[in-house]
Length: 398
Image 1 (cartoon, rainbow, N blue to C red):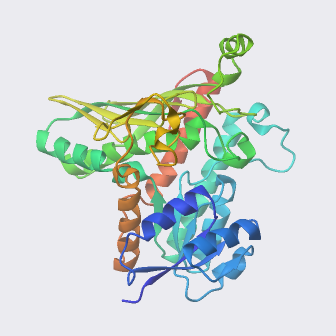
Image 2 (cartoon, rainbow, N blue to C red):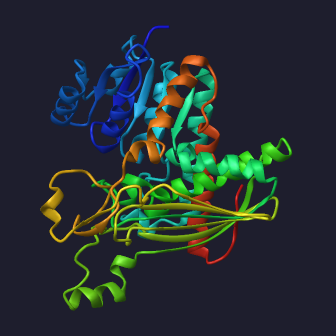
């Protein structure tokens, strides 16, 4: 087979992460054929590092290339659903960074929309965007690969095997992610990201819970276990009275999160149709580097999966400069004191495996492990959670 031609949309953090993991595949399997960026400067810098000749700020020009088989979308979320639909209508397969989509405002919305638009209306708009992508994917018979790396991470993979071996039933899943703030300059505004920590980070935790219950149901009974309701709370903790008091005392210097109209903390409980629960906590106010965990409480066992902060390597240094430019782990504030650098963060967190699965799924004509249905269901659950948090009561997942 000829190498699969990839057209990347975006030239910053997400695109560079995808590029690094494409590079781990055999050269006769995949080839980066072009990059589209909002600015020519960032696109040119990315193309130089990637060894790509075709660079454009015109998305249509990338779609028109006959040697591009797949569009890999690594843009801010506000562009996701439109770009995915256009790619599918052009006959291109789609790889997309999470989340699938959200609500980003319409003409006439009061701003900032995160503070002034009712969540029920946002939920309706987000669901319409998600279903429009699913319809385009099915209408054009293309593959949609949802870059939810948690479902590919080796600790989650091992968790699945242990669950299968145990014969027990999952009674509760607890999923957590926290760090001190997003890498993205767009993360502060709802109109750019479609939400705050609950969408941006919760897509991982919610996605893992949905995936594991779907998988468990198919394994045990041949039918996936679905979410039926959600109860949630959200907050902007960085602008709370507690935070302001710390700032006045000269503290609170390390957290980079500074939202305009989005939440930076969320807690939700998902009820599944078998009576089990999924508990999710996400936060932009967690120091100490990225923390990602899933715990499965079964009838006969407990299984803990930790995708970060593993102790295969441990370091101590009084001075953070001791290790200079050597990478430790995402979002770590300092290399001073005791730390646990990741040996291979992309592998341990599932980025390498997801890219390998996506390329294989497209080349072999099969569905990837994380596809359009998981992406749509994540949006549905998360926006039901937003409505629940605003209303202060449990909301049905439709």
